[in-house]
Length: 561
Image (cartoon, rainbow, N blue to C red; front, side, top):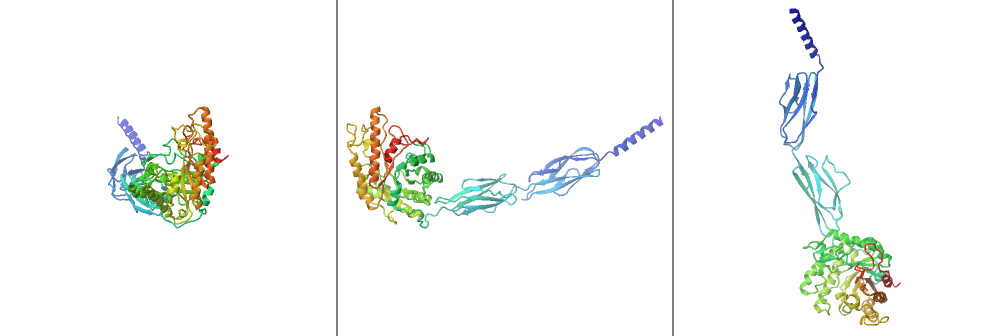
């Protein structure tokens, strides 16, 4: 029995010695623990087969167990104090067991922090580069609220808090502002950037403006109206380029017009529906840019181009009254100041026309109507000239009352102009009305030298065309004032019988050829009215979707081919 106990004791002692000879083991569950500035407790684990000891390098970082003889997997609670500073901090936990040392890095972020070196910046009209400096506890989310400011291709510097920006030139008269918002967690800071507007008046610039009005009129050739497009609006407060049934204008259309032989494009324009501030009458930048885009379609084709203020809801056109004169002139001044400055750098290929068909009715105008309408023309000239640059020499077009030829002879007084020989007069020609415009009329034939019968108009045939444009020559052209016939044409009547339609088309082409030749013979610039419609009662010559000529016979008649 004693021998058996001795053998067992020796066996147990041998087992104990064998266990004490096992290799030391120390495993930690992580080598890094991260805390937000407000977090205070987390847990990690160690696995060991020996006694162990834990130490923290910083007083703000503590563990619930500093040493022990327990073996196996142990949970250790780690506690840190809240970090109220604006700087992140770190500590090291040292774990030792059986001659093995391991460490855990503890990182605690700073309290959320976001600061801007400056919150307001003022930028010149020319634009350029800008650097916004900021401080942060973590990389902010940045939002820019307008397109004229964009982040530079130069990468922002996160470590130093530098945001590099590119500012576009401001082509408007008005100062503009934008904001940049920085967000870190629940912290928000905003930078305001203000950019000066363009100078209203700059030094006169005669470059590219060598042609006075008579010389330029001789270069303009035969013109075409981009009607029912950029002037399309349902009233003074709404507008859309496609509102009157035409597609958005494309360069392909203008290229087709050029290829047909037209050398001038008149672009009727609406502005009221694109005003974003009714106090200052500020025009939306996007609309000015769109008009410019269409102007460039024409100018890039070496075509002369006319932009105006068209019907535009009637605020200008329908108000030749004393009680409206001050209000309308203020708006006329505000709009033309913006238009003139925006397009100031164009050379002589661009002309401005101040109004369109100002009238109270179609009767002989009163002294009031003429005086007020004349003030609108004078305001237009004064404002454009006052912007300087090439506008000091730009050829400008002023209209007769209701653009009527007889009223032009009897009443049109050219505005005072500081520069000589840079004004043109404008009239329109839709005579005779029952052939050209009256959809209810049965007068579908024109030209007493070629036609007869009940469907021939009884007035306004060849003799009137010769007389009317002869008056323009005598009263204006011969006095050094070119005349632009800004609109003319006759509706196409497709609702006739086949025989009637054939005779009507022949008669209409004869009309277009004759009156165009009469204008050119008397020194006038003919600008055909095209409203886009190519069917019944339409004036259109081109398909505005495909750009093809729909009525090449009418185009040939206009061109004298």
